[in-house]
Image (cartoon, rainbow, N blue to C red; front, side, top):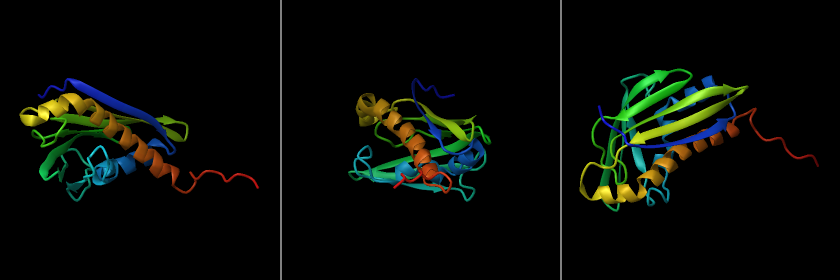
Length: 174
């Protein structure tokens, strides 16, 4: 079993019940949307997600990401390791990823009801890159990246459900 000495998490409230939020987050394309968008944290790059036809909706479902930063290839392969609808889901790397700031990791999310809303917690347990020049950037930026990634997953869920019918802000009176 891999040891994961570092940890980060993000929490937030989502404007939908857990069963609805779980259905949205259960599709890795939705959960990892931040990886497919160009961003400063990704140094202007983005990654392409690949997954099985079930979109990660079962334990054992494999998926991953590929991309590059400054021409240097990036890749990670993952598998769903736990899934308890509508409460929680976990996934883990299957080999040492080709990433700049973190090595192997285990991620997951938990949902809890808050009336008609959901409390969402996204966590990551990770190690630094195992070898090569990535260890130095990992020491300097791994924690920042892990926090950013978990915050993005929570924020993307919040934004998605704030735009859904029935969740739109009430217009101000004239």
